[in-house]
Length: 234
Image (tube, rainbow, N blue to C red; front, side, top):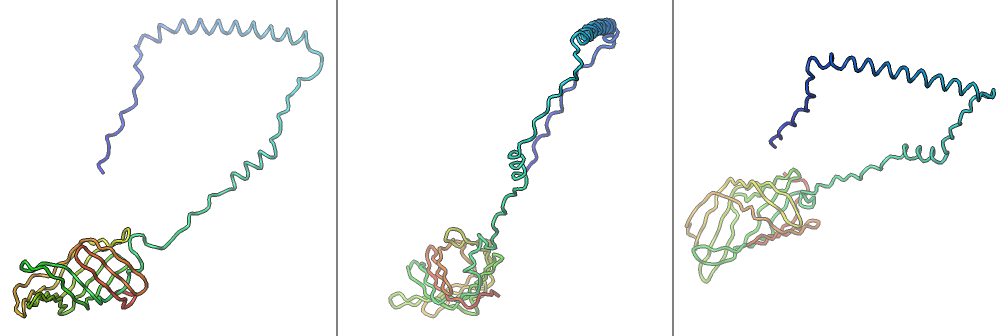
């Protein structure tokens, strides 16, 4: 953030003219002399009045009331009381602990369009590693084959390599960012390769349910079911 402008300096008092002291000195001396005379007269009158009314008794001293015990106890209790500490928790609100570990896809269905043909590809076997530090690795191995058959034509999307993401959870969703891929995706039609592109990943958020060793992920065009392999991600 850019710092704000510094506050203005305090106003300085106006400088007095050099001859002002000389002009006011006689007035000050006269005023002090008058105050001295008035003070002497007033003192004499007080002494005279005291001598006339003196009956030999010493001046009475008003005793100050002692502090109330209840007030002292209240003050002590207030001073000694201390606020109770806030409860602490080790749960990370940004990373659901249920997800942390290694999961293997048992079913992966995704809706897509290839060469103008709508289809649903089906695959399994990819591994997802959720780490507590907010890193996710999706490992497709040497060849993860997603297939669909439309009429008499077989379509295949074969992924190999690794995807990495940053991840966090919020309100029942997994949020992804910083997707990076190292690998290849090969498209085949009826066994013949039609194209080959670098591996890349989507950062669309997913809804999810996680319980024990079962995890389901729901994206805009896909549904994935996974089983837990272990709770210590690689």
